[in-house]
Length: 284
Length: 284
Image (tube, rainbow over all chains, first blue to last red; front, side, top):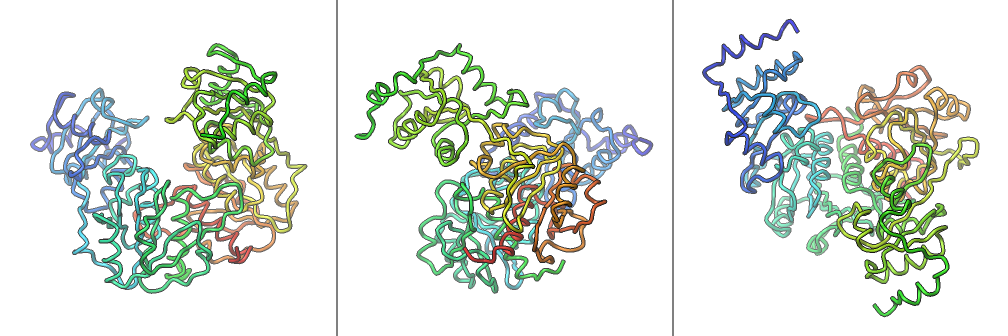
């Protein structure tokens, strides 16, 4: 523990630090966000713990508030994250262990909680590389599924995610957590309706692929080139009708057993990795 | 509703039916199973609702007890499942809506709950087709992840699942639910230790592939033929050391973003479908 000198750190930053108790408005705000009760229009999200702060530090995400509990900081790793967060965050608050316990949704207290501001990507400003791959999520309901898909898209190097028929907030804590930081890096753009999304893709010469259990060609029986949009439908209702009126190809994942379909996050990953590995070559 | 005549059905089967209240031992048993509290040695599992009973009817799984609540049976589909279950189940119990509510873990009451007996597959009796694909789960902790992988293996037509360093019971309700019936169809065999598993695979000429984020070849840079065993490690600790002492190949899934790895269920699916599609050809 030789590199942890919390007292010096607190002394050094004392003008920026504010001790707050459990009744402070900031505590209420963070609890609301962690319980998914924040206003829809606000793009505030909350994260907790070491791994999430490590991810956040690697991004340009605006860190609105950083709250930490000095008594809960044990490891050098956590201490360094406090040092970095003190520089990055607009507002810094110190809280007691009791207040941290009141806020925390985790089993283990790492002593770090932050409120950040998700970037609001606009379609007009989306910059894409040549021959991009975009994943379109149409009506997905479960925040955990959406987060897992964002994590997969981050991993596969998908260029953007489009969302139509939005059912879950991007700031939903389950989504943020399942995305493992992916929500900070992959540009995610929401469309007010399916037609607006189709029009944009059409104007920009995207080939549209629909993942559909009724298709008669598998996802392996296509060669993916040019601009690719892969459309994934909701867990219960599949893909909206509008897509079928526009030129498209349908992709099937063969199912050999008792289950009719894969979990939506699994199905997306199988197809997305096939598309990306075909396009990038199998080279690392 | 013209095909639903509950009274006639109850009359017809009256010798087999038993009305029970909330204090009956069967209710306690089913609640214990649904709460994951059943004894480890017992292979009893519980399922609830229409979809789960539909899956169960497609299998040879032994149905120990079937409990239903006549007042909760609305649809023809549910009624037909009652008819079938009355024939299939060893013991049949009728319960009130109040008792059903006490048991149920679902938001919507379908009026059907059953206790089944998972088959205990033994390695000595495992029959495999030529050049099988086996997925080995080594130390996986989360029942939901294991269930999702079983669903994927069912879909991909994986021949068997081997489990080493077991951390979750196969009868765990989250596992049963996430598997979407896959746990009823894919032969799943538990090994007491990794060495026993390696010895079996070695004796039967399996090529061993380890999914490892440190590998220097991707999962696409291999040609899969012969007998294949894909080893997947735990969410936190990866694959046990013993595997690395035995001849093997390592597989990487390229990661382009902020995340170091994919969700374990996602990673398994990406590799398993590649192996199966290569081996089966892209033909449906």
